[in-house]
Length: 94
Length: 360
Image (cartoon, rainbow over the protein chains, first blue to last red):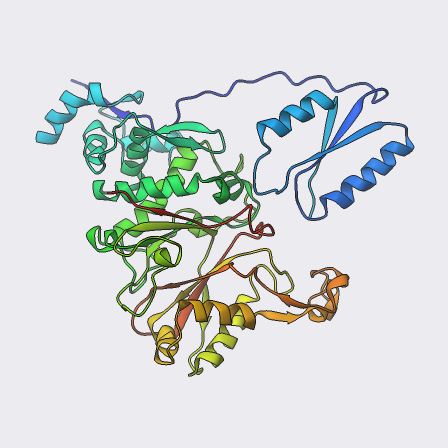
């Protein structure tokens, strides 16, 4: 006769929730583009160039960042980006 | 039989984790593989008997909150620690060391999320000091950085399994390491405290004598160091410096910490000359200062390097507090080891090793 055995789950027993992505805007006109510096070396050089190019096209930009790439952005920083920018571009570079 | 009866009696009341059922004809080790619960090596299936035995290694209650494990910041209880400790192959008496290691890893300055997520090679390296070392039979001698000792092998493995299973940190997902390293399975060892003249690492980092502690470092390795001819501390220090400056790349500076695992024969050269930890660490820092002109991007036809604006400086390889010397290894062999740190250490305050006392 077959018996049922068990072991215990080593995971956090949580499940990911899939959320639909927001549709990207058709145009950046009138929107604020957040430029987010993750704290890597030379991120600022990359974002400076992007900001310059966007300004030349009349697109509003706003700079955000975190002090080091070694740590995740705090909730406060993420909330600030959400409240002050319509779309965000993250600079990853070395 | 006693354990089985206890598991039957206590399992339902002590343990809150979900039961995962399998039939007699199923290999439980394969169940763990199929569910993605292993690091690639087989794990010990976490049955109620084993978990309850593991929980006896700590006075902490199974439902006690330990912390939130990145990357998912999932809640981790003592029970979940015990389950993963079973899977890693730990003995119950390792639990206080493992719990201290988890708490150290969760200190914000340890940046565990970043250590997992980086494209670099790093993972938590665990160094254990104090009376617990002998009590649980850890190895600080021959092959201390290698295989063969259950405590060394499984405590480090358990921490990494907790990040994987509780935190959800898996290679190819949030773990983005370009190449990884064998030390991502486990790199945990004890310091050799047999010489009373030597200040153990934990005491150098503020732990009282007679107490046990873990020190967690963001690193990988080991990298080999050989010098069979230097006979003075000055010569040996210069020699170590030649290897230490290569961490990451010889022309990269002030971005990584390092652990130097000093073998008994190399240590003997310092000891005979009366050099202590502080003097060795200071001398190594000074010996790794080099002319900026040799390190700038493009120098020697190599693109990597520091900005040209620093060409006129004398440039240290490390920040002043970035080197930790640890004694370990077998009595024979003029070999030592370097454990290179994560290159994200540009900011000394944002990223640091962490030492925690082990509460037994």
